[in-house]
Length: 182
Ligand code: AR6
View 1 (cartoon, helix red, strand yellow):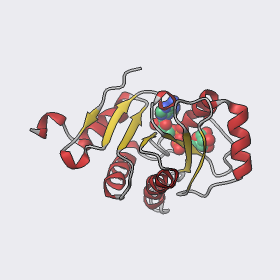
View 2 (cartoon, rainbow, N blue to C red):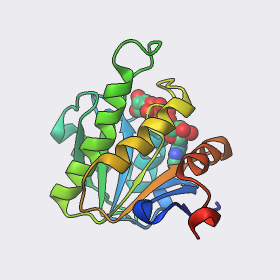
View 3 (tube, helix red, strand yellow):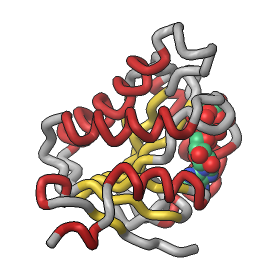
């Protein structure tokens, strides 16, 4: 699948959008959009389990046990190119007045904190909560970009991985046109 990179102004050099399959990303850590029981599932969670090795990843997740919405925990990446998987649990969309925005922002922030604890220098995020959990993609993309821009981190390569073209276009428009860079 295509991996078109788009970066923004100098201050955002570390934040880019790509379209593709997150399991193929050559980064230190990939983020999984998990559920609070870390039980595996469909969407990106299913893809990561299949590519990493489902039995090993299930066992590692079972050892951790659970993760609250807005929090993040790490396992090995097993058979993935990525050394680590950072599992975060996004909010289930309930209409927007149940604290969903804050929980989603916390996911992005906590993943960067866990990445810093691990020593990861590159990380790839899926569009957390925008599939099975029903978060509106445009609102989620704005929260992702704002939070990733505003969270201090040692990570130097932060990628937003869009599975579909609409999400990729959303990210590109929020990150700006690199042709404007001058
Ligand atoms: N690479 C990148 N992005 C992907 C991939 C992939 N291989 N596959 C799907 N996406 P979802 P959620 C995109 O449903 O909404 C699971 O069952 C997808 O197009 O994976 O946080 C968990 O176990 C969408 O844009 O995650 C939980 O129970 C985005 O990933 C629940 O779903 C997120 O969609 C979590 O739901």
